[in-house]
Image 1: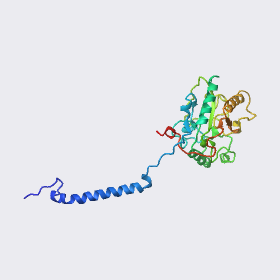
Image 2: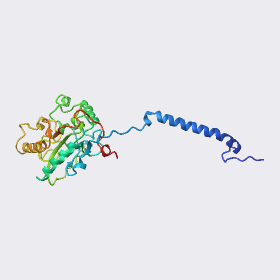
Image 3: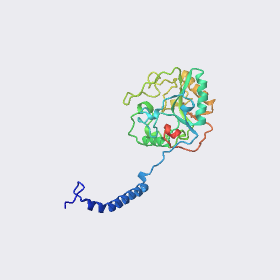
Image 4: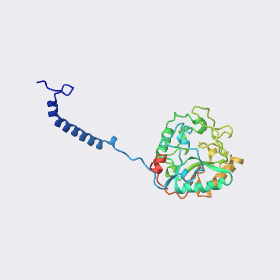
Length: 283
């Protein structure tokens, strides 16, 4: 009598006799895989770091404040997007955001608006700055941001540090814009760079009031009360400073754009969650 096969040359009787052993082997293999997966560090689901509930997106508190978040773009002193910036978003502690909102209401009545360049900054971004500062061969953005400073002195002169108040969530970099706000021309990598302290009509265009230097200018001319800055430029710096001081902000004397809300909710904690909507909403 001819024995039937399963189409691959294996007799059905032999196949049936092997089925229990095959099933047991498959179950054992699956169980082993589960154990390996559970124990493997690369397979574990690591939760993303999330902002404490005291942090908010500035846009949820005051959507009228202009946001030009520089560190997610290549137009910064490093010349590339910075680690930890995943979306062009200003994140702050709620008290700092609400204080900015009060300052904005005052400015809107006068025909002006705040514009933020940077807000909360994750520690990984600060680490990126530190790595860049130690690479003395990378000077691609020197001509704009630090033309008169030797890169080897960035730590000594205080332009770069291993910790930043921005990482505590109540510090921001900002300016004032006359309304209606004109668009800012986009930066194109490789374009000719102009010193950040050049006259406003020559340096990289910015729709803000003329503050005497551009944002992130590594130069003593960026000191808020530098005596060489006079006239309209000095008046604009004092306008920004007095507007924010009335709401509890303290200016860093070495940077006209740098302000910290006092008292800080986290005066000694440096956070490292990414700059993204997910960090503050969980979605």
